[in-house]
Image (cartoon, rainbow, N blue to C red):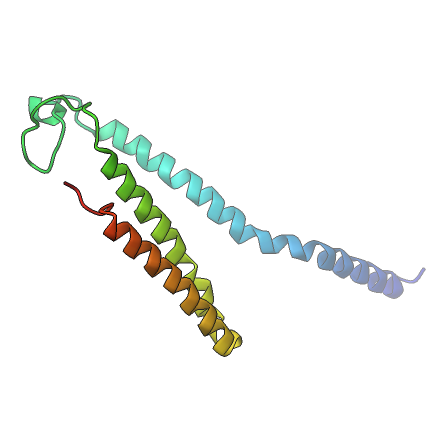
Length: 140
């Protein structure tokens, strides 16, 4: 075999192997991001553990309640109303999250999408009004 065709064959096979391996290079930024995302918090937590104060005063060990000295036991029971309000907040918050995808494709949905979302918001308003009238949103 003459040297010129051998070089041509060699370069074409090298370019074919580079073309086959090229898609893997697209994952390098993702791998670098993952490595940084893992190493940065570990490094910062280790650094803070090395340089933090190890002597705590009495005030540091007290429970914090908005700058007011705590009175009574910290393990007292919460009112059921607190949990009801928290659940209502979560329900309405999750329902409002459905507005974002609708807003993204609003131009494709046209009038039908607007009517559907008005029905959805109407159901939310009726539920909110019901909870308000039942007194579920009052603390006392």
